[in-house]
Image (cartoon, rainbow, N blue to C red):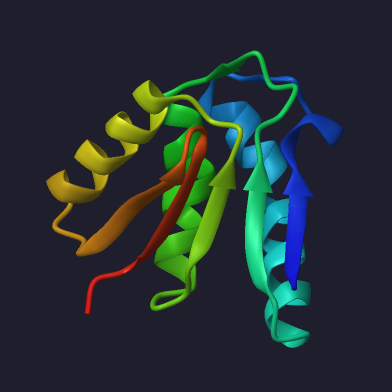
Length: 112
C-alpha cells in the first residue's frame, strides 16, 4: 500500500525555498507515518501549478537526506523539475536512482 502526501493540500505553488520549508514538517510527518505502517511514501504534485528546483531542494532532497536508504515516489510531476532534481543530487554526490515508472511518475531510491 502507498501513503500519498498531496502537496496541493498545503500549497498550489511550489516556487520558493520558503514554501518548501513551510511544507516540509507535514511532508516529514507523512513519511514517518508511512514508514511506521510499512508503506512506501508518495508525494503527489497534482494541482500544483509550479515546482522549482529550490522548492524540491527544501522538500524532496531534504527528505532523502534525513531518511537515507528510503524510497519515495513522485506523482503528477513534469519532466523538467525531475531532471533538475537529478542534477542537484548528482552535484552533491548522492547516488540516487531516479526511475520513470510512467508519464508523470518517478521513483527515487538510493543506488545499490
